[in-house]
Image 1 (cartoon, rainbow, N blue to C red):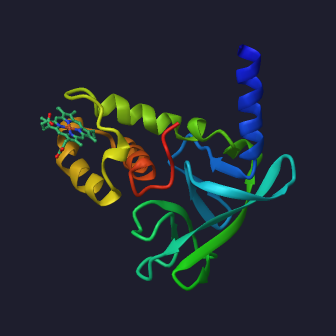
Image 2: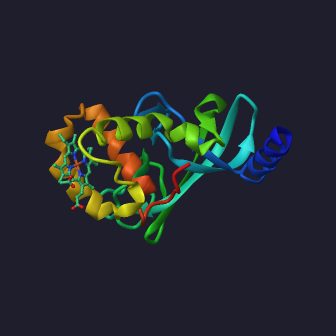
Image 3: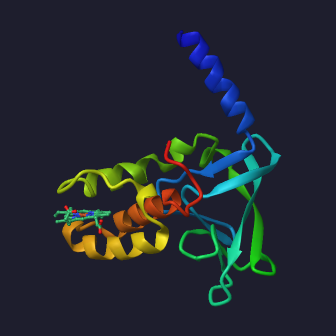
Length: 175
Ligand code: HEC
């Protein structure tokens, strides 16, 4: 039975090999000319083994042309850079990242932020799954829970990113 599960999960990860996620023990990863937010999804363009060229795609808010956002509501930033290529309301950027900062394991890339969310936000009540609300609602709900949960600034960004990314108008399903 174990063998079957193993080969199934290997097949699944092979199909997903072009979908990579940024891993970082900081909230953002600072590289030459750009700052990349943890957990951001990217597509593989070129694998140089020790490093990879990856492409980030998203939306650009005219008020913040240096930031590539995951969705059109401009709540979940992916990359901050002056070199984002604009195409109407959409944008993209190709960057070279160390392979150690990329993984095809979505759960791993989001693990720390998920842990903080579940730790800080289930002390007084049961879990409110990210999928229960959309990003805008989470922004308001978080605002009313912040004083109760008392996160550090660092934890705040982790919790909000986790909620937004996995919300019902987010970009990921919880793994
Ligand atoms: C100190 C206690 C406490 C902590 C910590 C806490 N909450 Fe709450 N939360 C409450 C109370 C009290 C309510 C209102 C009554 C209820 O639903 O239990 C509530 C309600 C909610 C609701 C339901 C709101 C609705 O309108 O349906 C959500 C969602 C929520 N909290 C999210 C969070 C999140 C996210 C965090 C972490 C940032 C968090 N809570 C941390 C006490 C807390």
